[in-house]
Length: 186
Image 1 (cartoon, helix red, strand yellow):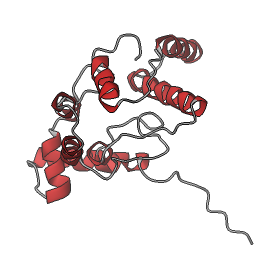
Image 2 (cartoon, rainbow, N blue to C red; image 1 turned 180 degrees about the horizontal axis):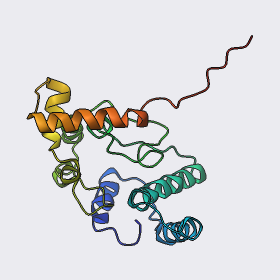
Image 3 (cartoon, rainbow, N blue to C red; image 1 turned 135 degrees about the horizontal axis):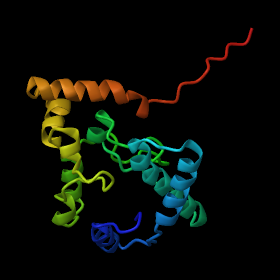
């Protein structure tokens, strides 16, 4: 959590259900300290900076725990989120392996049911906990609509299709390999 996390009970439920080792490391002091240092130097920071800094610190924390416990970090982004760029680069979209990245939200839910996860986790309203809105409120459309467009080719109303297509085009950089200088020896 970054201070209080209103839905931490859901993470604890999953940990208990899976019977896995877990740690709760509050990143609030690190987040506030780093943000204050950046503000002191730049005198102002963008809203997106304040929103995306926490996921990036969380990922650094996950890597610290994984390295200390000989573990690996899972990227839990899914195809629906990645399609429209609903992730933080080097935050929640980082990881050592990505078991869900080729599955859209409806397929992730079906997998959860097949694995016997508690229904409350499967049907939990997706919210990033960063901006005060649900994912679907922030995106401006429902995941069901996006999944039908991605998987079934069912076009949503024109204004939603345009928004999805625009987000797709704007955010491709988040899921492709990093641009590199094409070295060609003489």
